[in-house]
Image 1 (tube, rainbow, N blue to C red):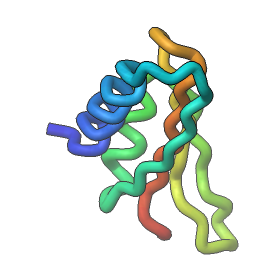
Image 2: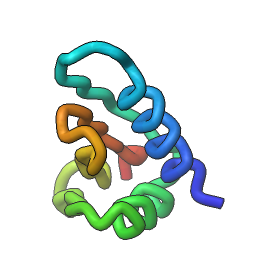
Image 3: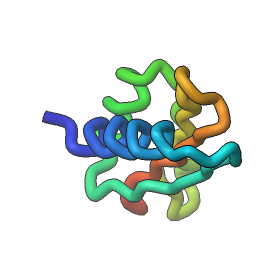
Length: 79
């Protein structure tokens, strides 16, 4: 199972149930770049690739479908 995807879905569920009318921006850090890539595909969101000459990571920003005020950035480990 993809732990990164599970964490995104759990965090989205928790943030969308809050009774506050504010924007929520969170960042999740994954231990596995492959999970970040798979999660981006499963969530149908744009995956940002690292530049080959720098120490970058794979990452994406997921915006909740049920509450567009909730956004979650997911980053993988530095390559």
